[in-house]
Image (cartoon, rainbow, N blue to C red; front, side, top):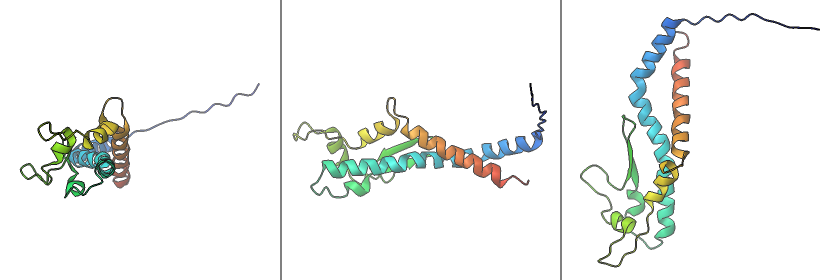
Amino acid sequence: MIIWTTDVETAIEFRKFKEKIERFEYNMPKIAKKMMVAAFTPMRADAVALARRLYTRRTGRLFKAINYWAFNDMAGALTTKKNERKNSAFYASFLEKGLAKKNIKARPFMKPSFDRYFGGDAKKGMALMDKRLQTEMERIIEKNQGK
C-alpha cells in the first residue's frame, strides 16, 4: 500500500487583508452603481425592443426616452424621465398602464422587462450584478497586489 501525504502551511497577512477590505468598503458606493448599471443596461435594451414590437406606429420620443437611473446605494429605476422633474415622454404611462377614458388598452413594455430581470423568481439581474461585483473585487485585489 502506498500513501502520499503532504503538509501545507498557509500564511495570511491580516494587515494586508484588512487594508484590502477597507479599500473595498471605501469603493463600495462606486461599485454599487456599476453593479446597477450592469443590470439595467440590458434591461433597458429589452424594454426598448419590446416597445418597438408593440408600437410599430411612430410614437414620438418613446424609444429614446426609455432609460434607467442607477444610484450609489444599490437602487435603480427603469423610467422615461430625464430627471426627477422632466418627463421625456409623458404619454409612456398611458401606453404602459392604459387609459380607460380614451379606450387605450394597456400594453406594458417596461414592467415585463423589469420582471424578467428582477421580478419573482427571475435571477437574471442579480446574476449580472454578482458578475460585476466579482470583477470589481478582482480588480481591487489585483490592483493592490504589490502594496
